[in-house]
Length: 87
Image (cartoon, rainbow, N blue to C red; front, side):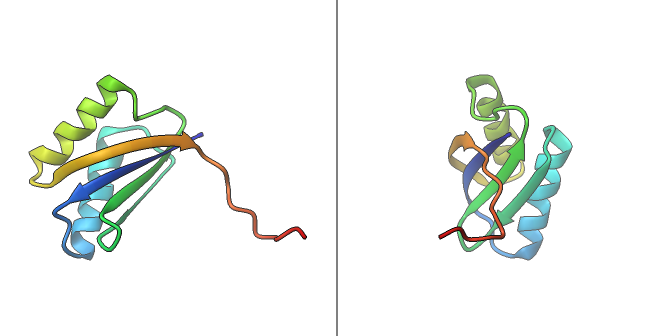
């Protein structure tokens, strides 16, 4: 699994977050997506790396076509958070 973080300008409220989540789900195959106005980003968990050139271009187009500003994106291997802390 891959975690892609997309930095976005223009989200102003919870409805913007929901709109961005819906856009990502509609246009890309994802396992999970969460957006944050406070952090100015959308985080996507997917099997496919969305940070490769042709998908990055597609993400940028989807975001800018809806009036938001794509700033950047990066991807890292996704690690599920453990509920237990090992000492």
